[in-house]
Length: 130
Image (cartoon, rainbow, N blue to C red; front, side, top):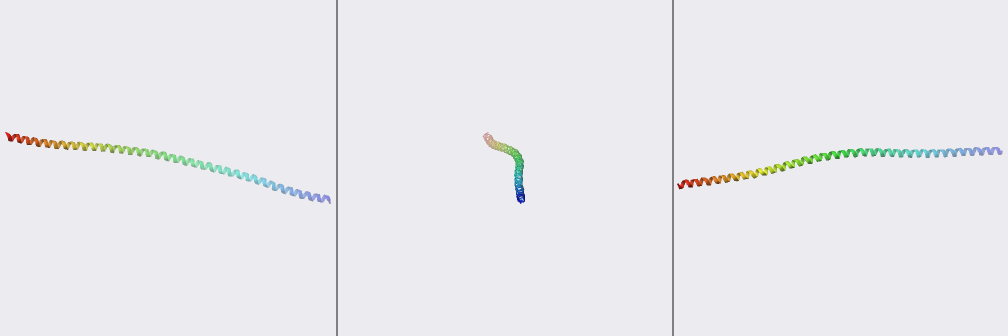
């Protein structure tokens, strides 16, 4: 009888040990899977961050290229505006000189007309005195 009880106890203890081992192994495997899942999430997160960084770098390069192009265009526009301003200034100076020259010419014609009238009066007076 003692032998039968010992066998029952051994079976129960063996069952408990196997059950405990299964639970313990399951927990270890779950932790390993959980750890693998965490590592996988970290790698995914790292890959996403790298991808976002590459996209941001490409975006920054495009923005920089656009800004350089706009700067070049702005310089050309400023250069053209300066040329137009210089041409307008030169034209204004030429117009002012032409206006002054015309006024001088008008003054000279009036003076010539006045001198001609004085000369005609003097001639008439000289002929009248003879």
